[in-house]
Every structure is written in structure tokens, then in C-alpha cells.
Amino acid sequence: MRGSQITKFVDEINKVMPTIIREFGRRQAPQLFRGKFTFPQVFLLDHLAREGESTMTGLARFMHVSTPAMTGIINRLVRAGYCERVYDPNDRRIIKMRLTSSGQGIVRKVNEERRRIMIDIFRSFSERERTQYLHILRRMHTVLTTAQKT
Image (spheres, rainbow, N blue to C red):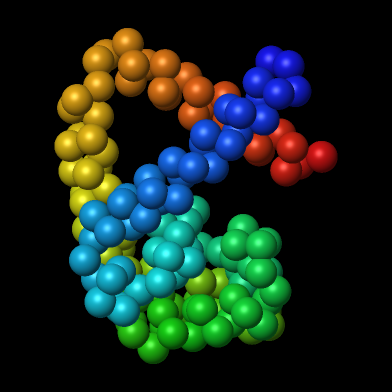
């Protein structure tokens, strides 16, 4: 793509992306919009569900925030009973976070809701369009994660 073509392409993405993000969010699990969870908390819960346990430093790195900021996010989740601190029996300075059964339930509910939303949206796409979209997303994932490591 020439410079002007890619600029037009990006401008068009910038026009539609805020609406797409807003509408996904609006359709997301209702507890997000009743003030029960923030998006960072949901991302964090989902990460813990996939990874199992993680240190505060690891979580802060994953979320691209400082460790003190991560402590604030985690403290709210711990108080609400969605995750817990696990102390290393050999070194009590090492603290890992993991989901409680309540936290696992929230992640399951959010993922089920996300799946329902995606099915509703992509039902109107052809198989070819869905395949192309998935190919592009995988390519973006590769570009973003490769750039992240360098």
C-alpha cells in the first residue's frame, strides 16, 4: 500500500473502531456495566484463569502497569473474593495470585457471554469472511507479539 492508501485505510479503521469497541462492551456481561468490574479487572481475571498462578510482578508486566497499581487492582479482587494470595511455603516473600472458585465462575460467565455475542455477530458473515477475518486477527497477533518481544 502506498502512503496515502494506508493513511486512508487507517483513518477508516479509526472511524469504526470506537463504535465496535463500545458496542462489544455494551453487550458484554452485564456486571461490567453495573460497576462490579472494570475492564482491567476482567482482563486480569481472564489471564489468571489461563495462567493459573502469577506473581504480582508478572501480572503488572502483563497489564503494563506498575506493581503498586497492580496491587490496587488485586486488592479489590481479593476483597471481593475473586482471587487470593498464595504464599510460597519455602519463601513467604514470594506471593502469587490465583483465582478462587468465584473468580473462575466470573471468567466462565464472561467467556460464555463473549461467545454468545460473537456468534450473534458472525452469524451474518459468510464462512469465507470469517476465515479471512480470523486470518487477519492471527496475523495481527503475530505482528503485535513479535514487536512486543523486540
